[in-house]
Amino acid sequence: MYSGIKEGASIKAKETMVNRNCGIDSENARGYICKADSSGVSIYLEKGKGRGTIEAIMTPEHFAMNFQVDGLMLTPATFYIRSTHYTKSLPKDFL
Image 1: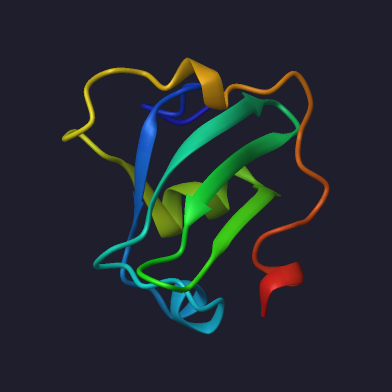
Image 2: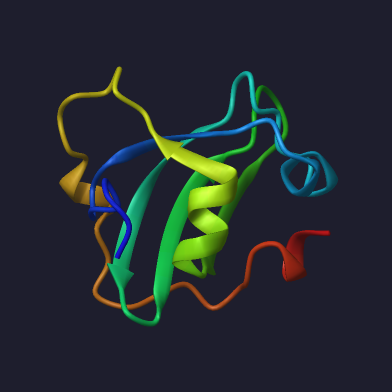
């Protein structure tokens, strides 16, 4: 597993083509890691002001390329932690 990928950690989107194509505003998108294990990383993400949310699973590699742990939010958001992964896949189900 990649460094920093821990359940409850706050995240922000990187400026990537995949994120732009999925409607994610990297300047304002913030979220949380909800579940992380060998089968993937599930996140809850607010896509940006007025853009809605994403609840999705992705590979750890996809997470590392498109998101990063947000050091501004120091307290883990344990209420976002899930026992199961989301069913929609990022980016496939959001393009």
